[in-house]
Length: 434
Image (cartoon, rainbow, N blue to C red; front, side):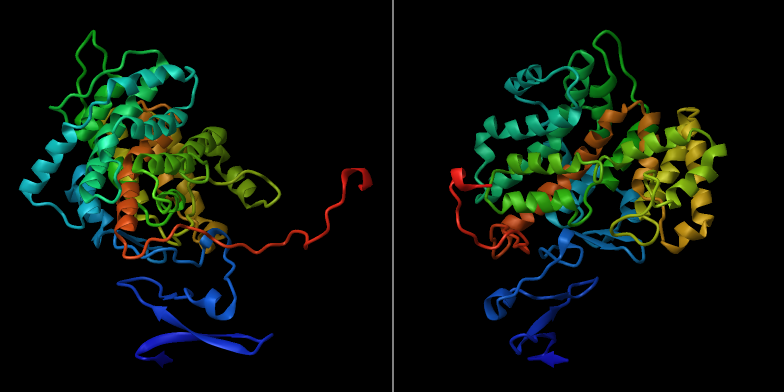
């Protein structure tokens, strides 16, 4: 049906007989959405959608995901083409500015990021306040939030230039913050960034180099790390992206908002999934135990689950998983890493895809299934896996935040609720309570 040239649906409250036409909005691609903006005002009704599984919380031009077809687009470009032809920094430019850069624009942007990698020396002292056994993600939350205490000149969120400077600083400094979190936990010296190195190479240098001897960057390792960053750069309105929009709607500074998103990503149901995959593969231990593992995963009474399979959005093969699988094989071959977990992973994938139970439920491997093995091969410890995710996703967060700030109408996030607690009741003095 249509009203004033627009599609609409009609909602009726049968208890009152009141009806209302709700416009259907259609974007460039994807599922249409029903505009319920006036529902509370005109009919005194809210919608109920735990987890926001059927709710579009914002309008965005950044990332599109077609979960049924297994498509992922950054600003309209397929992830497969970007992974083949672009670097992570080029994708950063694309997400921030909406278009792929020219050669001149890219050279200027790369130079800008390269020369913002140093941290304020006062921030370096902050690390000493953490216990040596602190989780690196806890350090990330603390240091990123503390940036707002050191970079006052870029906290005016109403100023486009200040927002841009904050974005550049975040992208540039997060590899240094992350690498130093690892070095602090090891009691090892903090290497300073080197401007002659690329983004991923510089991170590997700060992770593994020592002042007593030269450190050679392996080109395949750097390529794999760059791809990891690129594949995780953004993923629509996931929990951590929604967090930065919600935090940002209060007009908090960008570093406080980023810190909130890092805390959200830390959860095992979000950024910690690749750690869980490694643990699962280690628990399976051998290809001989694959059949038993699959049977346990089917048993609803057994707590064991196949980690790295299925996705909240994808009902097809995660396109990032295909790219990561190819890179995984390349890394292990080039670095001559004999990881028995790869054999278990490949056997598990093959068995699960041929099993009717998993196939009928469209439970395909996602990006987390192979990324953990790649990180292990590069020498990244398990407790740093989510930190790597954080580094890649930071540009997506800041792009989502900036898009929200630039929106025509910015309202502080304030979801409603379905209250099921006690009805209003009279207060009873303490001496009269039974």
